[in-house]
Length: 257
Image 1 (cartoon, rainbow, N blue to C red):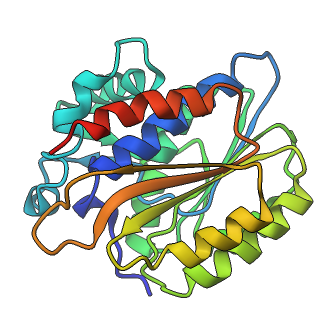
Image 2: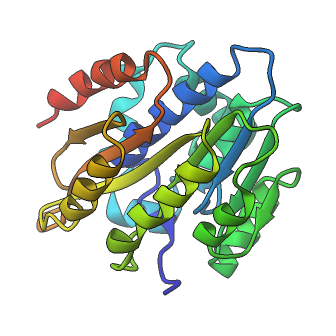
């Protein structure tokens, strides 16, 4: 299935949760003068126009980054990416995770991003001309890359979950990534759903990776009847300090009504 396009949801509260913690982890990794590998399995188009008709149609950004921007100090890694994106692309521009990675990493680091959707992949390549952007299944790409060189680094797994079988197959993929890449940080984003479709996957992941960090935030549904009521990150080998950073971020979500 290739129907999903993130522009309808760009800048929503799930993006705020995911991108704020991703930017923090990348900032953590670059504190040492050692090169980093970054792998992303489902890249999207990397750069979004929140004034586009598709973005305005759902109103998710208006209830997301538009109200959350003041949660972050000017020197926060996520806010630095937001500021850099607006400066380069205009006031309605929003960075997807591949662009955040480009902004927060260095020339000595290695980035590889997959996107299967043809239009999204074309946009991804236009947004990130210096990055290796592969048009292929992201899970397959990651199996072919791990362990990467350099070995120090992070993988972000961020599927749309429009393929419902992903809930069943993702734990198996991650099990293999963890075995092959024994020092890599592996972070999975997942939606928190009214239907609880995500819960069986999480039970398996927690059984397999008992010291991983599972962090979830809840927020009001984007519109009446919308099935996503929160956002989750499951991080294997979480960097020191991530749990505290995530807990601080959650305090802002807890105030939403």
